[in-house]
Image (cartoon, rainbow, N blue to C red; front, side, top):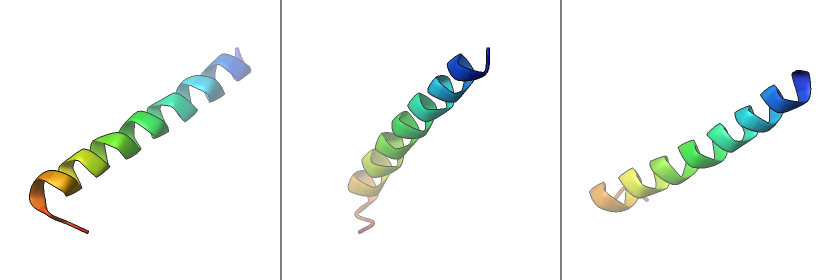
Length: 30
């Protein structure tokens, strides 16, 4: 199921971006 895989990969990228933003805010990285 190619489509499901692409959707999951996109969601993972979004969650990863929020994770990086959270870490940046905690450590004051701009």
